[in-house]
Image (cartoon, rainbow, N blue to C red; front, side, top):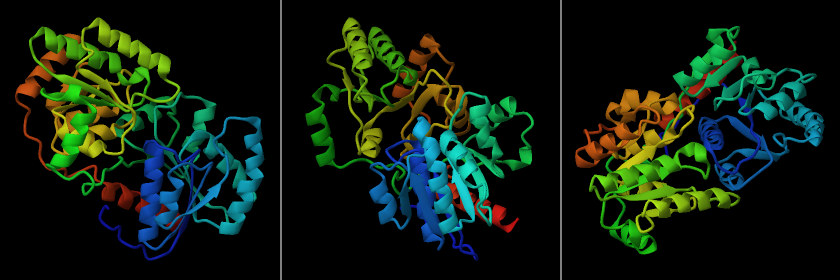
Amino acid sequence: MAAEVTQSPKAMTVVQLIPALHAGGAERSTLEIARALVQAGHRSVVVSAGGRLVDQLEAEGSRHIALPIGRKAFSTLFTVGKLRRVLRELKPDVVHARSRLPAWIGWWAMRGVKPRPHFVTTVHGLNSPGHYSAVLMRGERVIVVSQTLRDYVLRHYPKLDTARIAVVPRGIDTEAFPYGYRPDDSWQQAFFEQYPQLAGAPLLTLPGRGTRLKGHRDAIELLADLEHRAIDARLLLLGADEPGREAYIAELRELIHERGLDDKVVISPTRSDVRDVYAMSDLILQLSIRPESFGRTVVEALALCRPVMGYAHGGVGELLAELYPAGRVPLGDREKLVERAAELLRFAPPIPPPRSYRLVDMQTATLALYAEVVGS
């Protein structure tokens, strides 16, 4: 559990809007802010279609209201009136939209609600610019999760007042990812019994969903290039084996076989023990071929004192430039990728304990922003 957030003098009611509560960075941030609101003595409500994180949300003191405000269907328009009735009942101080369609539903629903709530938005990703995405620029304050994302927003929406933009990076719980943590012997034994092909050599781990944008092919080619240099290593594609991605996984397995790496690569489903996996890894990879808005994996791994290597673009490149420059590699430069991996496996520069990008910093900054708009 992160450090407790200081209680604000005036209790607020904050309603967060998000499509669903299954998994993902925006969903995790929703729960983290909801928890901070409750700890600080505020009323926290989340409106979504539901999902596996609802039980945790409610156990931590927030209320969940089930409405399919993120479903891309004509019927979603009928949730406007339902949400308006919810807002009239709750009389929230702040409505915080974290996704485009919920933001539109919330914007329309607030019409006719008196007193009108303050509207805050978060841009979590590098959304395609245009009218549909522009609703996120309507917030009294527009939160972006990185400087990369701030630059992107201003490039595509130059009329947006820079004073309304707040850069609030995501943060990680340093108690959940303690510096220098190592899993115990029983966990290690169970892990290598499950994946015996990963034992006996340095482990490279690339966490990410089962989509080609995450750079799985680049990671496989990297392992092959290390083999050609007589550097023995193993590769875990953590979380890539997802339902509905069978064709893509078959492609990856074919490439693994072509490179003669069948006994050195594991493609796993999502695991709940990523902290232990990261801590056991000799090098964490972040090879997304499209720029990402932040790159929480980078911060989590460095918090555990594990080296990270990634492409120098987007939020990942921004984080590496600040926190671990030795891990930056030009996008798509295969030669530089294998050279840098070999260097980091041989000797990784020291990693200091984290002093930024902490969960409590993100929670404190967000609650202060709420208090600011309510006070204005």
